[in-house]
Image (tube, rainbow, N blue to C red):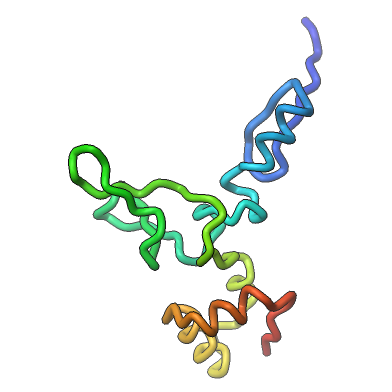
Length: 123
């Protein structure tokens, strides 16, 4: 039996024997936050009507050849907001509940401010 060394994506479970191939994959991996993909976005969620998933602000919805709407993962979305920052919000704090409500309202000013903050100041 031979031991084989493989490279694994830092963001998902994909593997390859070749470092160059893995670097190419990581640059477009849906789980890499730098690709600004739906899979790492605040607005991505489950929905029972469109293939099980949807974008809450309408990106990624496409009409297929049969005229029905499908959801396809997109990259480099201009509306992308990293889901990870929301995990740091203490939702029991009244001031953070207001902040969270503003974010979830989809207000462009709030979304742009969140995108530009390096660290969101929370209670």
